[in-house]
Image (tube, rainbow, N blue to C red; front, side, top):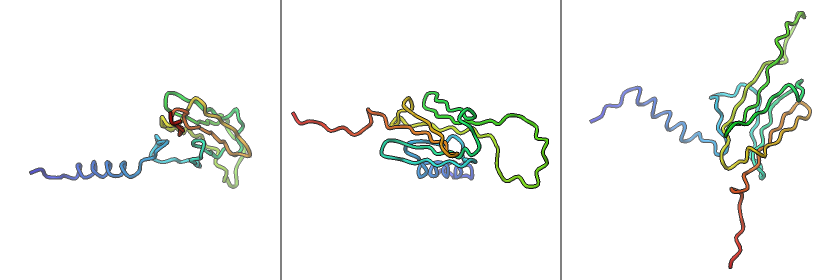
Length: 136
């Protein structure tokens, strides 16, 4: 007879949490995203919308490596001489990474920035797209 200890229950909790919390097209490497991001499934693929208010196109780096999509921003290390009465605009760095499913073609990903919204689109892979077969 096997006794279930507290450690085993925690491991089982993780198994069940991961079983029910699976994301089919992407998986976030961090357990919690601390930056405003929307991930939308479209008919063409998956779209990532990232808040980039006040940033220029050259401030953000987007890289792909293997099955990973990484979007990062690191502000300059300038020292502000200004004294803020209230500081409500978050000018913090971010480094977001997602593991992309093989259903998506990361090599054909594209990015645009408009009105403070960075949009990265990753289309479905052609080999995974629905096909219509002809009857011979």
